[in-house]
Image: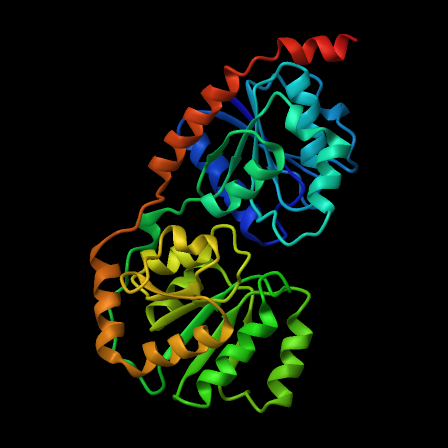
Length: 353
């Protein structure tokens, strides 16, 4: 099958959409599909990757796509324009929402009216149930759940070593306001006032400088390490030495980094409002908190209660999570087939008029 993925955001920028689209394309190619990724993100051109300089859609001509999957966040004009054009041109089209369309003011409604999205002959999907529900409410259309996935075999738990000194807390995230980079430091500072800990934050982004100032201002240099962007093998090693993975974002639509930590056997502490709750059950795979105060309290609880921490870690090491690639590819094939069955006769009539 000739599959074309369209995304405003792609490597070398690092984030959830970027990594997921790269991995999804690689997995589909390994399964025998002909896959092309198209993006406006600048960078090196590679086989199977087309970079375009503007948001026009004339690049679509001659691609012979059998299905187009547009990956969208809160604002994704390039992918949205491509989805609209391909769907009205009669190409089976799937739009996958990777963000939570909540707490955005009038933006979703304005976009819906401007683009007429609820009338597009596309198959709508989202990466989790929390991400799907706002789309259903906004557009009044069916929205399928197409979860993100990880290579579970690549994140098998490594042998446990002794906890050397202070217990380690790990976070892997884009350092942005949406990911709640500065509130993460508030949580760590509050917990560090009650229990001994050492935290490592892996990632980069626009809030990096503000986080550095926060660490200096509050004397947290001996508590918090801002490690910057790291490769996956380094993250795996860091997970092997961590006793808690902390994911502070409330508006996390799925949480790939948290799933990788869960697959590696590490207890996960996350917001109960986020998509992480799709694969973390409170008290079983980790703990879920309703707000920052509760998150700090639960972090103290995990670090102070070795018995609780060990029980959760043993469960995570023995019971593999869902959301591996075999399941994900099957889900995508199912939704692609549904997109192929969408009635586009009315859409062709609209274009003709």
